[in-house]
Length: 288
Picture (cartoon, rainbow, N blue to C red):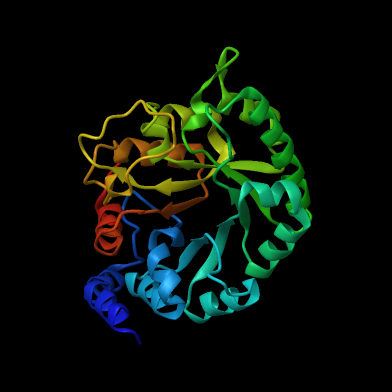
């Protein structure tokens, strides 16, 4: 085992062991999950050492994951390593252009990874996100959703903030919701990328209910200004759940009422190793 991996495991193992003894990690009297980790949180670690990084995830006590790449491994091999580490692959992300130009390959890889959901987290665009680009994406997503459904996999789109731009009497996100087929297309709410552009996650959860099947849980550093629809900010603005400016109890309550099926902690900050256990403890104690 590499030195940095031993250090990371030392940081998390004692806390995770205590939590595991008390009950399932990250779940508590109010928050019932189901819960996993978006592995993109540990992207730098995975790029250096896949087995060690999987050991770190296991050390957190986490048993479910959302994927974001296979780190030069075949999907079959990465799936094998996940299961060998006691981590179930629930969902994964693929790039927009792959859905647009090589859908058959995406379906094949998603099947090999053994996931229940496959999604897209960014629609490439120059300048502002336009209605024309939005309508193009709607077509891509409907086709992807139908193709994946034949393999028993549900397609989802992960919003990133720019979709809240005006369109008709609503927003681009309203247009997506209206014109994607709910039988084949679901949505993953990243609460950071709802609040950062100046929107309220509880209102969007209430508005579209069961269309939100997945959720990224993350918190935003206090003092960070909102109202920016760019979908970009310093990754150091990610903080442990409950430590930032998000109204987490209200958001979690609204998510439960909407029927969100899976929750994934995503922490893109350089301090993710220290913050992920803090987020797990918060979810175990939060009341709503």
